[in-house]
Length: 297
Image 1 (cartoon, rainbow, N blue to C red):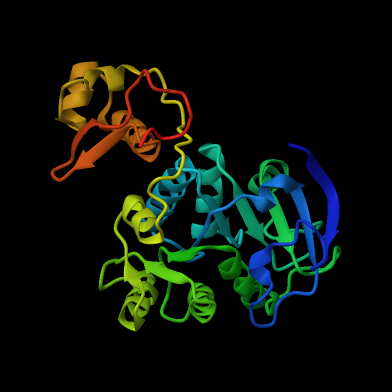
Image 2: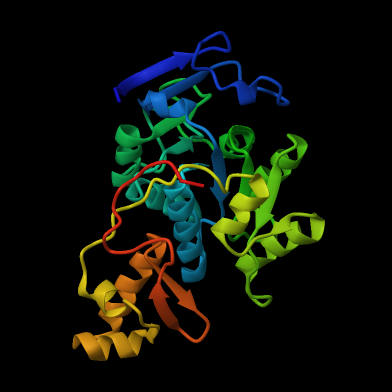
């Protein structure tokens, strides 16, 4: 794909103009984009949004959902904010998927800036309705949320406070006729209150990426698998269901190291964690499967 380094201007008459923006309320009159421009046309997309101050649980879930959805050919759109948004963008890129970041500033002065933003500018797409040179301003971010929800088939809120910008995105999605999903959290944690509020308002409770894909009708999409590493840990799980401690003892490694590797393998779809902290090989993945292609079913 060709990487567009300088801002590319799009109008509603442009061939690359996202058709999803045609009928939304207060539709933008123009867009500027940077990155692998062809990815702007890739569909389907799911928005993953959430708190700028997430818990470790929230970060893990954002990465889990983004990686698994990307592995099924579903792109991820978000707002590049620190926390849940960036975790979703990063996991999507690591899975080789498509990620779109909708900004509250010009695409030539993205905020927050940094290594991840640079990478999205090379491997994903940076999008803004604000002219190049426009600095980030507080009132731009709620406004850009309607574009995030419009581009997506559905919006997943991972963690959010009771009054949160993520809820603004969810409410825009409802107005646009899009599905809204929320993850349940601890009832005593402030970062769960926004999701629980959405659930009371009618959002769908979601516990797994597969459940979300089923709700959106995307279960039969092509599989774009992340090659699994050639690691002794996978070999130790062949025909076995073991705890991290049992694996560490067999491999003569530290439990903390084994747990860290298990998390990465779970994100890649290579292992499945069962109740009781038991791990087994994923039924649809094995160390020898590293190719990508259409599903046979």
